[in-house]
Length: 269
Ligand code: NI
Image (cartoon, helix red, strand yellow):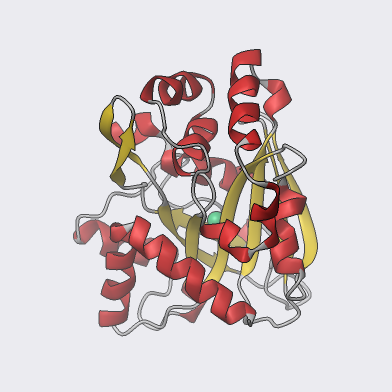
């Protein structure tokens, strides 16, 4: 299988889980824009069985290489990004929750969940779209996790899937700026992440980003079905560095705000 085929599989899974992202995708195509995938992002816990390095193996197998590391001290996250030698290949951003920095209860919940993942689950790429291995879900556990970490609660509810795809604004024709895309989406009644402003980053950072707010989707819990924020769709414009090459990394301060696209509180506002 080629990495292109893997991205097709990941997109199909993501589009099915996030109807709003699929709608935005088709709306942009209908507008005549070309969709180029800048990067995808995956989330996990820092447990040795499923940490960033474990998830990265699936991409390293296709020739991806680690290119950057990022710390998010307030959210207690760590991330790495990976690039392929083919400049058309999307970049990969994988983050992990630093579970030891949370309560013993949260750590126990994560351990219980991780122990339910069969050892052979990581032998197949299907792992990247597997979702949760810890069904049935408990809404009371979800709420408890949410009180400590929005990220932990998201992982508990959705597990392993693509957290977001990112459209490369550089490849657009009509929309020159991230702010043009934002205006277009707001006109079409899509909700955007406003944390840190609609556009995160500046040309001085060589990267500007924005994102939709995660759509609330129905999730089945033991206690009943609840609508909770799932994934979001991101837009990125990259600027040339002094050496003339387009910046290919990430900006931690911007990514920190982008993480909040799945924040339950923010999506209610
Ligand atoms: Ni992103």
